[in-house]
Amino acid sequence: MDLRDSEEEASFRTEVKEFISREAPKAKKGVSGEEALTANWEANQAWFKKLAAKGWIAPAWPKEYGGASLTTMQQFVLNEELALNRAARPMHLIIGLGMAGPTIIVHGTEEQKKEHLPGMLSG
Image 1 (cartoon, one colour):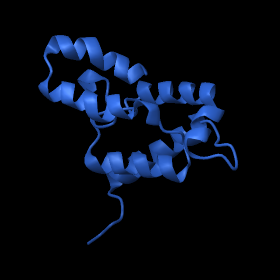
Image 2: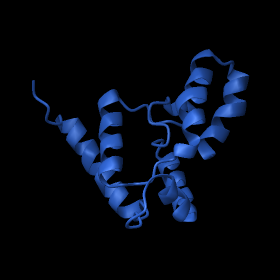
Image 3: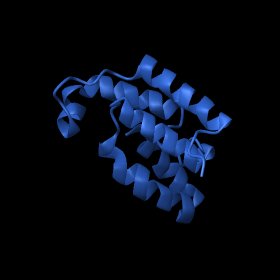
Protein backbone atom coordinates (compact mmCIF):
# COMPACT_ATOMS: atom_id res chain seq x y z
CA MET A 1 0.00 0.00 0.00
CA ASP A 2 1.47 3.33 -1.09
CA LEU A 3 0.50 6.13 1.31
CA ARG A 4 2.26 8.93 -0.54
CA ASP A 5 0.22 11.73 -2.11
CA SER A 6 -0.70 11.34 -5.76
CA GLU A 7 0.45 14.18 -8.03
CA GLU A 8 -3.00 15.77 -7.74
CA GLU A 9 -2.99 15.46 -3.94
CA ALA A 10 0.56 16.84 -3.69
CA SER A 11 -0.43 19.82 -5.82
CA PHE A 12 -3.51 20.42 -3.67
CA ARG A 13 -1.42 20.08 -0.49
CA THR A 14 0.95 22.77 -1.79
CA GLU A 15 -2.01 25.04 -2.56
CA VAL A 16 -3.42 24.54 0.95
CA LYS A 17 -0.06 25.10 2.69
CA GLU A 18 0.57 28.30 0.74
CA PHE A 19 -2.95 29.57 1.45
CA ILE A 20 -2.64 28.86 5.18
CA SER A 21 0.81 30.44 5.35
CA ARG A 22 -0.41 33.56 3.56
CA GLU A 23 -3.91 33.98 5.02
CA ALA A 24 -4.39 32.26 8.38
CA PRO A 25 -3.98 34.26 11.59
CA LYS A 26 -1.09 32.99 13.68
CA ALA A 27 -2.06 30.91 16.71
CA LYS A 28 -1.31 32.55 20.04
CA LYS A 29 1.27 30.62 22.04
CA GLY A 30 -0.04 28.78 25.08
CA VAL A 31 -3.65 29.15 23.96
CA SER A 32 -5.65 26.26 22.53
CA GLY A 33 -9.16 24.94 22.04
CA GLU A 34 -12.12 27.25 22.55
CA GLU A 35 -9.91 29.86 24.17
CA ALA A 36 -7.87 30.11 20.96
CA LEU A 37 -11.03 30.69 18.94
CA THR A 38 -12.24 33.51 21.17
CA ALA A 39 -8.82 35.06 21.92
CA ASN A 40 -8.41 36.03 18.29
CA TRP A 41 -12.10 36.30 17.36
CA GLU A 42 -11.99 39.09 14.75
CA ALA A 43 -8.96 37.67 12.91
CA ASN A 44 -10.52 34.20 12.98
CA GLN A 45 -13.80 35.51 11.53
CA ALA A 46 -11.88 37.11 8.66
CA TRP A 47 -10.02 33.79 8.18
CA PHE A 48 -13.30 31.84 8.07
CA LYS A 49 -14.58 34.20 5.35
CA LYS A 50 -11.42 33.45 3.33
CA LEU A 51 -12.02 29.71 3.77
CA ALA A 52 -15.65 30.21 2.71
CA ALA A 53 -14.62 32.14 -0.41
CA LYS A 54 -12.66 29.06 -1.54
CA GLY A 55 -15.48 26.70 -0.55
CA TRP A 56 -13.19 25.18 2.08
CA ILE A 57 -15.45 26.09 4.99
CA ALA A 58 -17.69 23.24 3.75
CA PRO A 59 -15.28 21.18 1.63
CA ALA A 60 -17.62 18.24 1.01
CA TRP A 61 -20.59 20.37 -0.04
CA PRO A 62 -21.27 20.60 -3.77
CA LYS A 63 -20.02 23.80 -5.44
CA GLU A 64 -23.55 24.76 -6.40
CA TYR A 65 -24.31 25.21 -2.69
CA GLY A 66 -21.11 27.08 -1.80
CA GLY A 67 -18.84 24.16 -0.97
CA ALA A 68 -15.73 22.96 -2.77
CA SER A 69 -16.83 19.48 -3.96
CA LEU A 70 -13.49 18.13 -2.70
CA THR A 71 -12.71 14.44 -2.99
CA THR A 72 -12.31 12.44 0.19
CA MET A 73 -8.51 12.59 -0.14
CA GLN A 74 -8.55 16.35 -0.75
CA GLN A 75 -10.68 16.77 2.39
CA PHE A 76 -8.13 14.68 4.29
CA VAL A 77 -5.26 16.83 2.98
CA LEU A 78 -7.11 20.05 3.86
CA ASN A 79 -7.94 18.85 7.38
CA GLU A 80 -4.42 17.53 7.93
CA GLU A 81 -2.78 20.80 6.87
CA LEU A 82 -5.18 22.90 8.92
CA ALA A 83 -4.35 20.77 11.96
CA LEU A 84 -0.59 20.67 11.37
CA ASN A 85 -0.53 24.44 11.02
CA ARG A 86 -2.82 24.99 14.01
CA ALA A 87 -5.14 27.05 11.83
CA ALA A 88 -8.40 28.04 13.49
CA ARG A 89 -11.40 25.90 12.60
CA PRO A 90 -15.00 27.16 12.67
CA MET A 91 -16.09 24.78 15.44
CA HIS A 92 -19.00 27.08 16.33
CA LEU A 93 -20.47 26.25 12.92
CA ILE A 94 -20.13 22.45 13.12
CA ILE A 95 -23.84 21.68 13.54
CA GLY A 96 -24.81 23.76 10.50
CA LEU A 97 -21.89 22.83 8.25
CA GLY A 98 -21.45 19.21 9.30
CA MET A 99 -24.97 18.05 10.10
CA ALA A 100 -27.87 20.34 9.18
CA GLY A 101 -26.41 21.56 5.88
CA PRO A 102 -25.68 18.12 4.43
CA THR A 103 -29.14 16.94 5.52
CA ILE A 104 -30.79 19.88 3.73
CA ILE A 105 -28.62 19.29 0.63
CA VAL A 106 -29.77 15.67 0.40
CA HIS A 107 -33.37 15.89 1.64
CA GLY A 108 -34.42 19.56 1.45
CA THR A 109 -36.48 21.27 -1.17
CA GLU A 110 -34.84 23.83 -3.46
CA GLU A 111 -36.62 26.54 -1.47
CA GLN A 112 -35.14 25.24 1.81
CA LYS A 113 -31.68 25.05 0.25
CA LYS A 114 -31.88 28.66 -0.95
CA GLU A 115 -33.21 29.84 2.41
CA HIS A 116 -30.85 28.04 4.81
CA LEU A 117 -27.56 27.06 3.17
CA PRO A 118 -26.10 30.53 2.46
CA GLY A 119 -26.52 31.55 6.10
CA MET A 120 -24.75 28.43 7.31
CA LEU A 121 -21.74 29.22 5.13
CA SER A 122 -21.51 32.80 6.36
CA GLY A 123 -21.90 31.96 10.04
